[in-house]
Image (cartoon, rainbow, N blue to C red; front, side, top):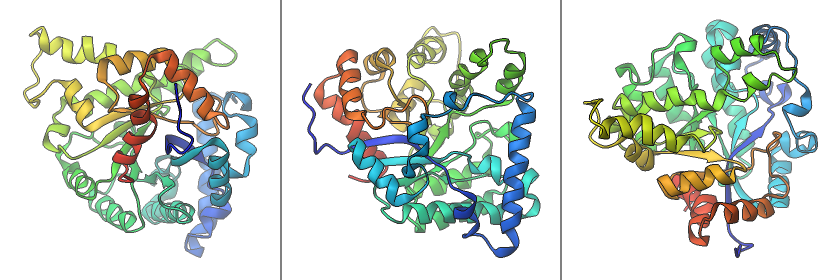
Length: 364
């Protein structure tokens, strides 16, 4: 497999730790101490939800990558990407806005906190808005406010926003509810992509407390599959039919199970004639290929299955810097090995590692 050294690799999942100092500098003075207090409250709540379980730090990160300056500083981030041969990255905060800026933590100041957090994100990206495609944070408790926030971050160069994948756990309706329509409209109009990242939910925390294995291997291995709920609500509700320009990516779902989900559970039941979904005009897999997609790290067999089932146009490669599965700083070598094992052609490899990202995030 021949790889062009000048090929613009696009990683659609990477992470940055926005320090308290980085965020508080972008907040009004009256909110700075509140931010630090809120972070500590969030950390304690997470510990309580895990029943006091503290994971081994090496299970959560690659120690070298985690301590690299590129995990904290934008100029160092670009240098870390250069060492890895990566042109651009979609960058998520280590702790998202849904967890830190929620009304139950920040009270009446939650919207101001969220906007300040997004300003911190925008300042990080401002060093190179083409290469650093930071995931701006949305919490749709207030739809009118969320629409204004989308318009505001669009002015600052936003290409994507992160939404909580399980809105009902925040006391919100599922995303097919009509109240969200103005938000889907503005995201469609601006061309900003919705990102649903792998996340813990109530079931995950409950499993952590029941899991008898010392590393909680039962609980920590299953969250990707729980994104099936989110995916099904987006498609089967007809939301993507009503908003054909809305783009939704699933980040870190794992690939191997997706062909089964569509072939047997979604498309399969319709083709067998047992289930009717009147809000749909196409098969679920056609909406996925038209408006959605999934990221992956190193998963040769899952890549093979998804490539054969969906084709190359809705698959997105990532490094997952600086987490344990990261390919950094050897991404090109591991990428070549993975795509060769999956039997992906050179042209389609370029789509998955480069062209899909360029198109999705309007870089081409």
